[in-house]
Image (tube, rainbow, N blue to C red; front, side, top):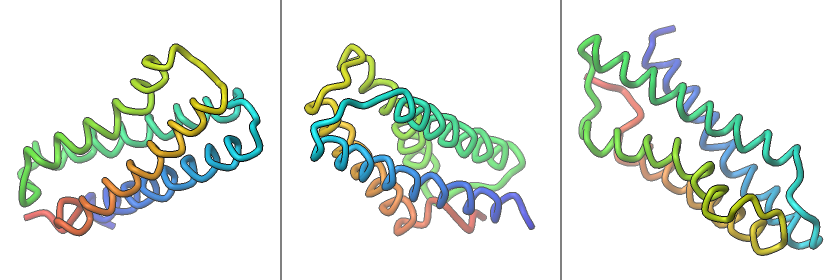
Length: 127
């Protein structure tokens, strides 16, 4: 397995994980339940996974592999790393229904960003 294959697998994991986080938050909002510690732990796992994908992408770039649009790749990956904890900070750690709706939208949006990256060929194969 090459580094590019591993990058693609981890990226796909993050895409599916983001969609699952969005769905989970939507269910919690629909039930009018607060976001709890389990959800916050999952948010940090998502952030850590995005950071690992970004670091692997940077390592591949240092090794000489390049995505078709390097700047676009870096901006999208930075978005995926920063937005979940950034939203937590903007909402001041709220756990109510409106916060759950915000995370549901953000999870879906992050998954759509991942799909966009995949369609643009930013995930692989790199040349």
